[in-house]
Image (cartoon, rainbow, N blue to C red):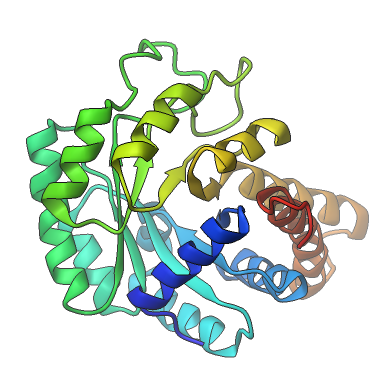
Amino acid sequence: MIINRDQVAKLFVAATVGKYAIPHFNHSDFWDMSAIAEAAQESKAPIFIACLPKVIDAIGIEKLGAVAKITMEQSKTPIIYHLDHCHSVETCFAAIDNGYNSVMIDASHGSLEENIEAVKKVVKYAHERDVHVEAEVGHIKSAGDESENMVDGKATVDDARILVKETGVDALAVAFGSEHGFYTHKPKLDFELLRQVRKVVTVPLVLHGGTGIPEEDVRMTIDNGIGKINIGTHIRCTYISSIKEAIEKMGTQTHTADIMAFAKSKVKVVVNEWIKTCRADGKA
């Protein structure tokens, strides 16, 4: 099934009512895309499958869009194919033209005015084509990057309110202390900031940097308004380490399909664990 913008919105409404979050998993190629999709089928859960612009550069946007389209059409559970952390308005347009049904325009590195300008352009183009759009407010840094003060990157309540009001964006990633990658310290999530943003913003809120956040904190973010949780590093590192393990066990003369089947099985375990974590009742 192919999911349009209105159907994505309904999935978020269902998540709010059911007190769970929709999990989002970043993929690196077609093998782990397949693993993520298969895990969603097993858990009967709606999910986002996403790629970074780096993956587009490596594989090609036409190929990614074509395979994602087949994956979504064959799925019995809702899958949204998403472009994650794209800094280019033009690349967002290209993703939309190639079948992505959700894109994130990340213009958070600029001023609020520059952010709003970029988001408005993508929202106009996307909404005319029934595509969902996510933006970011504040700056969600990479784990271990101590060159920035953690407080400096956090969103402000006013910026979140203004960006949503001015752009009509569909979902908002809020910087409230989470980080991309494995944490080098205990995550310091500002739940009060999250609660304040939730009061003034009606669109779904997104947690980036899910990898490494304790399960109890993940559940608390859901209780305080998070509707989507992004997991990238955990998937990628499981995938790569599993390929390495398979080669060490089976040898280099083993067929690629057998190596990748082993890696996929490991990725699926992680995906299913995260699906359960994102559900308020702990069930898939």
